Length: 336
Image 1 (cartoon, rainbow, N blue to C red):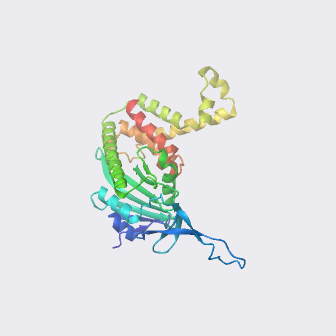
Image 2 (image 1 turned 90 degrees about the vertical axis):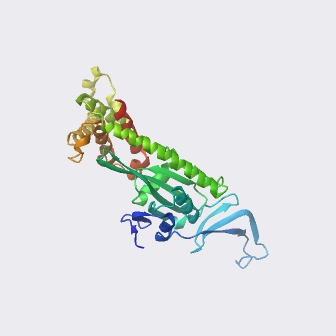
Image 3 (image 1 turned 45 degrees about the horizontal axis):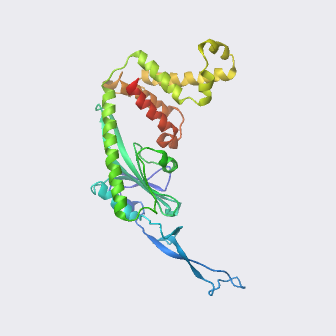
């Protein structure tokens, strides 16, 4: 079987051109290894600098986790820690998706201390012209320092920078399920939580598709376009820019003599002009005629600027400040 490619950006992530089963993903990405829990011992050297066998003693309630293929050390944990092995995680994911091929990416880093599997959970096509996909990312740690996480998104993993961004902000994202290894208890608890999370996300995704279809059917007037772009540009401006430009109309002319205010005004105008150009050009002609001049077109002008024209990092786009601003732009398109 040759359905695997290594990302050009990081050798630790495997991308699958077409979905594979979770168990196949483990084999293709060299993740089909288990974890051994080894008792921890302590002792002191004797006068010759060698271990004193008379002083060796078992440290109670402590275990060292090791890979069972290489013996590589993963971390030291208490006896309350319940590791979720790669095979167990794969089986739970497989059951959640009816054991159908679903995994499109897999990764392992820090010697196996962190493992990721990403599944494609669905797809939608707004007004028949804008194809998109839904994903679920499953993260597991094997060193005692992290939780098992389920993270829904519309972003397919392609490099480790994205994975690290997910981890840093996972707890702050909506829809994330975070399960402590101390609280896991047994496999069925993890399976039930993931199944419930996937069901909730499926409902949320269906609502998203319904909203976007609604946007694609509602035309907008020129005044609405200007107001929308003004409000999005103001929302994403830095606090310093908003402070410099928030004076009353009577004092704006005077304040514009200030060099800092001039720079802030140019920054704000530049953002508005960029989004206006994206809207007017129909995304350089890429916007399908069927949705031009709609609220969907309006929303796309703002989100296209945020994710492609504003020099934002992967982490910010995926789950950081840019993701928050994009959500604002989507919400505003339906209410302005």
